[in-house]
Amino acid sequence: MPLPETDTAPTRGRVGVLLPRDLPVREVLPFARRAEELGFDQIWVVEDLGWRGGIAQAGPILAGTTGITVGIGIMPAGARNVCFAAMELATLAQLFPGRLIAGIGHGMPDWMRQAGAWPDSPLTLIKEYTTALRLLLRGEPGPAGGRYVRCEGVVLTETPDVAPPVVLGVRRPKSQAAAGQVADGLLLAEPAAPAYVAASLRNLGSPSDAGTPHVVTYDAAAVDEDEDAAVARVRDALSVIGEPDWAAHIAPLPFAAELREHRAACADARQFARTMPAAWVRQLSIAGTPGQAREAIRARHAAGATSVVLAPTGPDAPACLDSLARVLDPHS
Image (cartoon, rainbow, N blue to C red):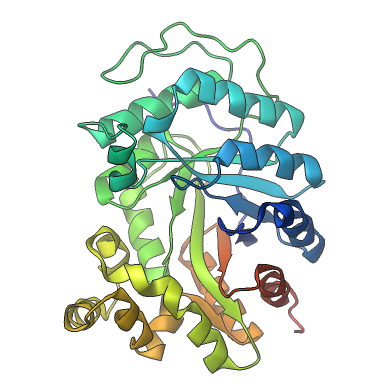
């Protein structure tokens, strides 16, 4: 049975920024406030094992800003009991209506195994988890117990007026199809070239609810009047994309076979990224002059993204944030 429609509908053309996971703690709130001041629509926080918690970051950022949307991307389904995750998210959504997006994913397999939280069937878990989470956030009783998720009859007393959208941060076709069945959309990790966005939307199919699905993309980003300098700055961020976990991102690209051959010929990931043709780098990131970066963002929106999120690259995140904001000014 289709779940009730989420109250918050996506708006095409959003541009957000990713909070660097290694940003010194004293810079987290100033970075978020500056992102809002510069005009970004959204700021997204990550939850990578051993770094900072997603919900714990989202709360202070929501409190320390006035209107910017905060996305959590992603919380692994195996990391938290769904009832308590729903309580945390519902509280944030009550306090800051319409400003929260919750991303759920499988989590990186090695990290989840290390934490003892990798299930035998990640697909079953994420479908059960997302179904239950969205019902609970709307004040409806938890569904009948499944293979992994058991919250039958649980009802949240405190629920938000605006239920936050729940998007799935997943890569593979079956998981993306599941997002069309049980979630409000997709979060596509970097690199999210337009061809990958389009392929992911085909996998998503018709959403379970009426309306346009949220489709959020991440991409390594650098903006500079010197196009070559911007391209050079994003290269290290692309070092992992030749590894097997990123195969789904690469498969739809016209140079996929050549990229795989290039990775096989390189001694390591660093050499792979440093010697990748610049034309590939431009397609796999948002890098170049302000005009070129705006065009890359437009291409992702045209492919179906509702929010394009820029991941700053380079050692000075605040300075990078200011340079990325030039994409928001059509006259820059």
